[in-house]
Image 1 (tube, rainbow, N blue to C red):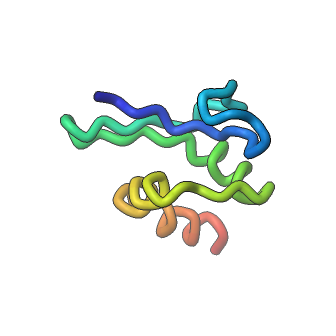
Image 2: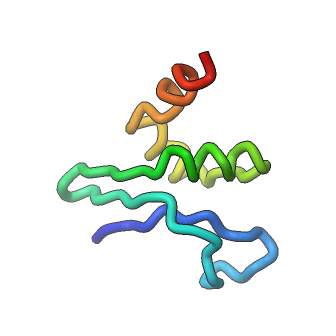
Length: 71
């Protein structure tokens, strides 16, 4: 199974239309692909990642990368 990581409006249904695909995660191949600028954009606009997405971002060292871009 491959999981898409998407930004979605909180007011839309769970299966609703996503605002933008920002990455994917393949647990079998242990592969993660993230669109860092898009993720940063949505986080700056107030997006709240789910616990699962936060775990994926942490494993991909996204937050370390974010700190480097802000420095």
